[in-house]
Length: 133
Image (cartoon, rainbow, N blue to C red; front, side):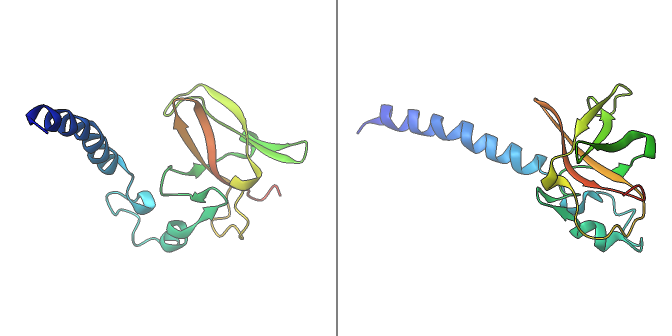
């Protein structure tokens, strides 16, 4: 085994190592309260542990209150109107997967959604119905 065998191995380790470092630095902080502004709020711990069948809600997506006109049911399933792409004013209706519906009581009292955006578009990570249910 000469020097030529070592260089390709080291080169092949650079890309996965670089990808691992990039992925680790891009992972969201637990609870998405990045600057601590909500740490003293009464429901902070509840939101930190809030989960649907798709996992923790606040770990990968920012949730927000949905107005009654922006959610309903169709064919026995929820649907919600969310921005087509993150931070856009152009909204689309998205069917909420059954596993994204939060089953525990809504302590916040308002309808909330946690959309998740990626290359394929938008999906719903968590959905918590409000008073309309």
